[in-house]
Length: 454
Image (cartoon, rainbow, N blue to C red; front, side, top):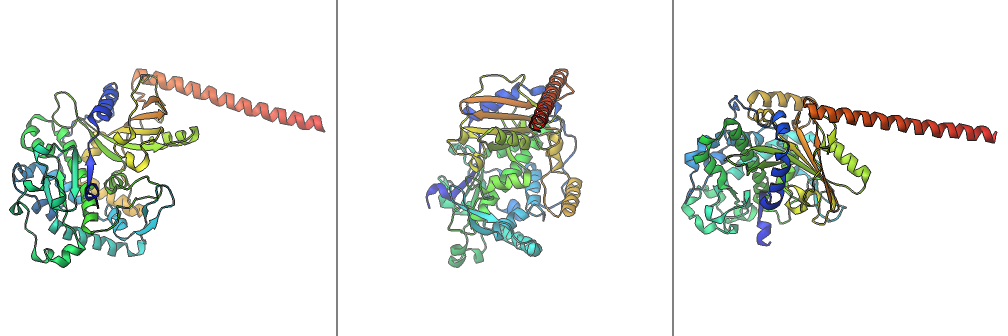
């Protein structure tokens, strides 16, 4: 396999393109973002009661510029959340499908392998096996932060072996946590690889020197991104550990390409997570967004996609471009995080739903009583269901060839938005009345035609 196939990463957006666009468009609607609760102060402390998994406690490399022991207490809430994702039964269904799902050839282009669901009759045994696999992976995996000279552009990268890292010489054999003799034999190494996860030093630097200048709300966002990035990379490490000779499978038939980490985010979190950096005077993460992409070919496809992107956005089911009429830039599909699942680089017609996450939703992931409540809900449904983001501020990027328009959700507590909403309701009422009149005219014509024939 080529060097490229030996790693998988959770990528930062292109700063010159997507990041600047998001800063521009979201900067115009800061009032709406604030009112949606995205910057609310969070006064509750994390209350998760689960232990941090041994892989996150004991498998950090030492060496130059590795200060994990200094920042471990700061990392703890994120490590606890990552551990919860990997120990709670219902979220682990994602791993059972990866482990036991039937590999089926896709009938779509490009042809690839997708995963078929497993039987629910053996679910308990499958979850137990996944937990055992993760525990064994936790005995051989190595976690580290990227050396600063590498200027890593990804939030996290997973390599199948130490030698696959371009900077592997930075770490001596003694920098790596000890591996038990039973996992060091040639027989074991033929069956399993020993992956490395490399995290962006942003996280280490934040908890080492920047946290004192940031608010608890900003720190919650960093904890959340850290946990999501870590589990995203664990999905790749899990696949590498199996030493599969085939590329990663796609999660659902019809997806353009395989990316297990993004599939995990979509299935467990609900959408792809993306942090917003670049705000002047902010050392942390000002806003977290969830994004989703949809390609369309005609107006009906587009309307269906718009409706789907609005799920659980209760502020208003109405989108407007009333105050978002600009010459917006054309974005390259490859620069959009998550695009590899849905878009080709040649895609010309697509929507990007950008949902700003409120802090109540973020902080709830760190609360024990919320996990207990969700578990009861999953038990009742007999399935895992990602928690909805209520009252989110939604921006939709709509590209049709060389034309771009921006739609955004309304907040009717604003006088301006209430006026727009009223005008839209009036237009919709008039449109409905005209449609009914056309139907009546057609029916009258049909009756007259029948009478004339008689």
